[in-house]
Every structure is written in structure tokens, then in C-alpha cells.
Amino acid sequence: MKLMQWALAALLTAGAVTPALADGDAARGQTLFSRCSACHTVTDQNKLGPHLSGVFGRVAGTLAGYTFSKAMVAYAKPWDETTLDAFLAGPAKAVPGTKMAAPPIANPQDRADIIAYLKTLPAS
Image 1 (cartoon, rainbow, N blue to C red):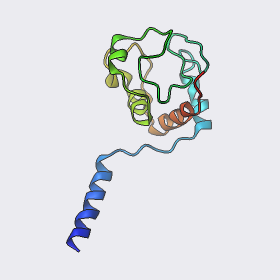
Image 2 (cartoon, rainbow, N blue to C red; image 1 turned 90 degrees about the vertical axis):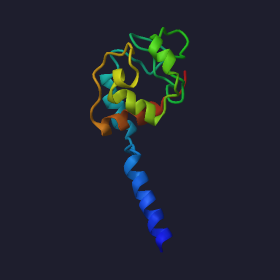
Image 3 (cartoon, helix red, strand yellow; image 1 turned 45 degrees about the vertical axis):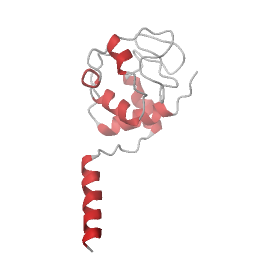
Image 4 (cartoon, one colour; image 1 turned 30 degrees about the vertical axis):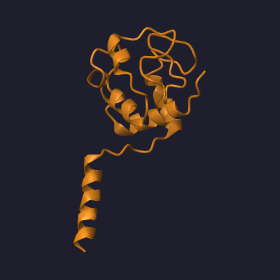
């Protein structure tokens, strides 16, 4: 019985320490992406920021044809739910020295929806 109580306590503690990302709505995320479209496209065209087609799984700072900040190149982590969520929540906090000057997306559900949309974008 003690072992079961300890295991349950460990699971509950692990859940409290590890943030769970909300499930995202890709259709809503596509609408919310309008916040990003002044600087980013979902095609293979770069604008002020790099294009985001195929961004999910791509290593930060590695898109050919776009000049990234030294900070983004050094960050060099793959874009996944966790890294994208942290970056959208606070670009300058997640990657100090990044060129991205957009305001953070404070709402966790908005971030989850945008990430769900980005996951649908094939590499061009």
C-alpha cells in the first residue's frame, strides 16, 4: 500500500511540475496567424521574418536563404510544441538577442492553436 501511495504522489508531483500544453485548434490557429503574417508567410517566401512552411521539426536558425540573428543560430533547437510555445510566449526571453520584435502571445490557448496550425504546414 505504501508503494502505491508513493507512486501516486510521484505521478501527481510530476504532473504539477511539468506544464501540459493545451490541445490546439488548427483552424482557429490559422485565423490567429494573421498576427504573424505581417512578417511571416506559410509559403516558401521570406519576408521580414523567415517563412514558416515546414517550421515544425526544423532546427532554429537553419532555413536556407534567410539571415538569422547570431542568437537564433546559436539556439539551434528543433521547433516543437515546447520550443514554439516558449518562443511565442516571450521571444526575447526564449532566445535573448533574437531579431523577432513581435509582442509575446500571452494567451496559452492562442499559442496552442497557432502551434497546431504550424504543425499542418508542409515543407515547401
